[in-house]
Every structure is written in C-alpha cells, then in structure tokens.
Image (cartoon, rainbow, N blue to C red; front, side, top):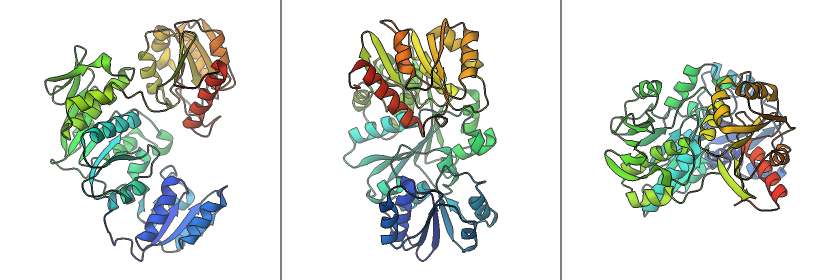
Length: 457
C-alpha cells in the first residue's frame, strides 16, 4: 500500500454502508482522516455500527441529514449507486465539495500495475479472464477487484509495487474517479445503459471514458472495434489504441478470422475451443487476450484459461443437464443487448424465461432473435405484457405467464423436450421482484435444483 498524507487531518464523509463504503471508512481512519459514516438505512447487523465506532468513526444512520452538508467536510466518498441529484449529495455538488467513489481511494493507495475494465456488457467475464491469464504467467500477486464484488481499496491495501490488480469499474464508479490511471484499460462495448442515472447517452459515454482520461501514449486502451461509433469514441483517448474485433474489422490487435482467434497475424486457437459459449464471450476472450499479450502472457497460458474457464455466476452460467435438457442462468442480462447475444449462443431450441422491471421501453428488437432461437417463452414481472407483445410478433407458438423467475422453472419444464435449452435471460433488471440480479439467479438455480433433485455443476 502506498503511504499518502492527502487525508491526514481531513474531515471526510462516507455515504453508504455497502462493502466498499465500509472498507473506505476504515481505510480513511488509517490514513489519518476524521471520518463520519452515514447511511439512509440502519444496518440489520449492529456489529457494523460497533466496528465503525470502535475505529473512532462517527456514525449516522436512518436518514441522510441535509445538515451534514453544512459541517465543512473536505471530501465526500459516495456509494456509486447513489445519484448526484440525491438531496444530500446535490448540496455537496452545489458547494463544489470533492465527491469521489471508493475506487478512486483504492487507486490513490495502490502502488502496483493497474488494468481496468469497463463497458455495458461483459465486464465481469473479461475482468475474470484477464486476471486468470495474467496470474497464470506471473510470479507476483495478480488479483481482481471493483464492481466484481470485491472492494478495490481493500485489495489494494495488501498489494505491493510488483503486484497487478485487474479492476472492473462501472460508469457509476468512474464518475467519482478523477485521477485513476490504468496502464491498460479495456472498454468491452458501449450501449445505452443506466440513462435513468446519467440522463443522456453522452453523459454515460463520458463516464465510461473516465477510464482512459488520464492515460498517455505510453498506456493502452483496448477497444471493441466492431461498431463505427466505438471506433470514433476510441479517438477521444490519448492512449495507444489496441482494437479487438470478432467481426475481423482490424488486425492491429486481437481478432477472429476464419474461425481462428488471432493476435496481430498470429493464430492462437480455434474460436470453437473457447469453453464459454456465445459470440459475446468470443469478444470477452479477445479483449482479455489483448491485455494478456500486452503483458507478455504466453499463448499456452491463454489457451489453458480459455479452454477450462466455465464462466462467471449469473452470466450465461451453465447450471446442469437433466433428462436431455440443459439449464443456463443468465440473470445478469438486465438489458436487451445482453439477451440478444445470449440467444445467439445457442443452436438448440430455447425455452426463454424473461421479464422484470419496466423501464419504459418495448422489445421489438428481440423479435428476430425470438424467431430464430425461441420455441417457447415464459414472461413475468412488470414488463411481462410488453415482452409478450414481442413474442406474439415473433410468432412464438408457446407463450406463458408466470409470477417470477422461480415459478417459471416448472412451467418451462412442462413445455420442454430432450434437446432443449431452458434459459433465464430476462433482458430486464430484477428490482421489481428481487433485490438484485444475483438473488434472482440464485433463486432460479434453487428452483432448478428442486425440480431435478440435483445440485448445479
């Protein structure tokens, strides 16, 4: 951990008691700050508050008192999910108080080699693949952290100058990372996500571009090259651009050509030998390969990872085979694009479980994929009627309604046949029925286990 004096004697407010917020609060005490920790809710576990107070941290729970904005805080460390128009946060914005996220704090104390990944889809798989490839060839620590469910600052505390940290960073986190400077940055893709938070697509793109804002020509930006817009976005970076392309649009980086995965003219492996299924995972693999090759990883180590890694939980995760049916959990598909690419990964007939939070859009874009891949669909959640409309347009012969992703499992089984895929890929957020996509996916797996009387693979 890098020793810094920036926070010595400073008044710092931490808003939000998530994993990252709690770690940030305790770290700031180590850095000499006078810390106040605030959360809108009172933690169910009283030990959380006890541990904070034991560390000399002032704790305020149950509300976000606007009076905090008048106490002269030097810095605010905000939970990434709290929007900037939150009444308390907005007061700090008006006062021009610096507002950062825990990822920025992690960067400030990190003294090793930083690789950072962002994008609308594929972040976690790409982060994991990159970490596995780099770890396989390194004699030093190679860890992952960030939006992948592990606190950036907590991991950074334990790493030295020769170690590597591969970080997944969301647009929410990156908005509060003014100085972050990865040597290698990856943007997997950019669609139109989280516009309820960012308000406009341009704001969303600008948030993503914070990953490369401080890079120079001595650094690398690995960018998806398969859309003209993404190529144009890459030109906003001062870094050396390294493309990856599943559609063979550039040979300057990693790409697929004639069924082969290649790096700058060198054939590495057959695309069909990648254990992860679907075109999106070819793209994730290409992005990770680019980072690995720039870091000196051998083809043998790259191939070893790509032929053995079976996927990240909730991201087109293979659950099990049972009586000729294959179950997949893709609960992380919280937008239309993710479900589009998931469906393209299957040649077998698909029974699709889809629906969730109604964000105001309709699903006509899914109609071509429904026509080609889906034999039956079971819809649920707030947007079930809109999802059903798309299914009718596609001419899906079997369209059923169910209460949620759990009750849909036995319904899917009833209409399935040997050779079918039963796929949870909702195309919507989970918050109308579940607290997170992880809970939704876990409950789906539990329902499959109950149905089959088997454990997930």
